[in-house]
Image (cartoon, rainbow, N blue to C red):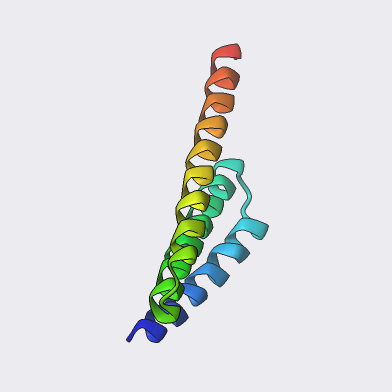
Length: 85
C-alpha cells in the first residue's frame, strides 16, 4: 500500500515538474515548485517508514522548514513588487 502511494506521488510530481517547465505565468511556477517540494517531503516520509530509518524523517523535516522559508521570501518579494507599482 505504501509503495502504491509512492508511485502515485511520483506520477504527480512528474506532472508538476512539466507544469513547472511549461507554465506561462510566474505565479503558477511558484505554486508548482511548492507542490513539488511538498510531494518530495511526503515521499521522504514514506521512504523513512519503508526503510525504518529515523534520519530520513530528519531530512524531511529540515527540507520542509527550508521550503517554508522559501515561500516567505517569495511572498515578501511579491509584496514589495506590488507596493512599488
